[in-house]
Length: 114
Image (cartoon, rainbow, N blue to C red):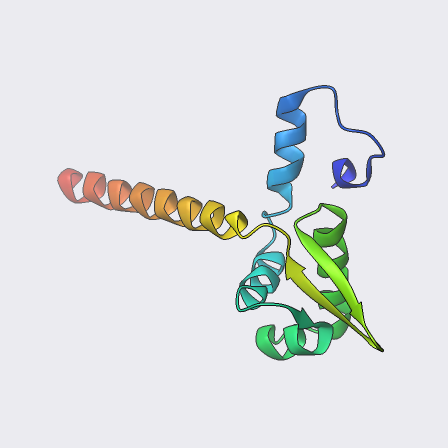
């Protein structure tokens, strides 16, 4: 995910879009986002919600923060993370709908073939 760490935006808008979609291409990151759907959580709460290790959750929260998908908010000794724009959940839901429709189409094509 080199594009996430770039100091400037790529000149090619398609490259920028591809970099953005890479953020959502890892199942554990999607699990972290799903945990944050309920609202701001600290790392421990995300670990409890996902069953992932603390190191893995911290890694994915850092990547999501760098990408601008998640914001961090220090509160005393804890840091809370929340999704910056709830529209991300609409994007994920739309992708799930497209995937489901594609799979149904595949099954229908297979049934017609048999």
